[in-house]
Image (cartoon, rainbow, N blue to C red):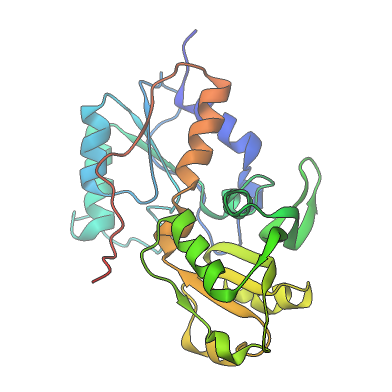
Length: 268
């Protein structure tokens, strides 16, 4: 049976349909043609010209990324800058690019759910939810309970270990009530500070996300323990989601994690 790139994308969209994306987003096909036999899929968080070259070297004519390559308007295509260079490389190599971004963020088994599972959260609920006609409850972020209470310091250590983050920005534990422990945890992969108040309203002792601004730490210091890891560390699991969706539908199909992709942020 010939498997087309459209077959691969249809499998992903059964789990994370494009209708789940946020209004500002650009989930979907970024470039290329889908009604062709798929020779292999390369998975990444962000697309670069180097990753397009890696796909070609591995014999893949489809890249599935988390972040959209085309997010802001491209008014000329000259090959300058990361986005245009990747776009030109993909078109020349006849490699299609599909991005899933906030559709998989909001999916029932999306990024926040995977993060919760890795942390060992139980009784997980969606923080900002709405009902989808086919998938049921979907939405941004989740909240759940740890099996055992942890001190703020112990919780930060677990977060760093689970997500491979060498550092974590966090609230001052001394600002919390004396003896405060962490049991109920809210979280959102990527830039999720917009859900801090919602997590606090749902009884979370701590909230995990990335890209939080200074005022988030200042304003919530006495209400909830805020832990902020790198954006890449919080969303790298998108590749795992795509891999399992594709290989479950098409066992033994050629699906690869990018071997050259690295976190663009270094901690010195």
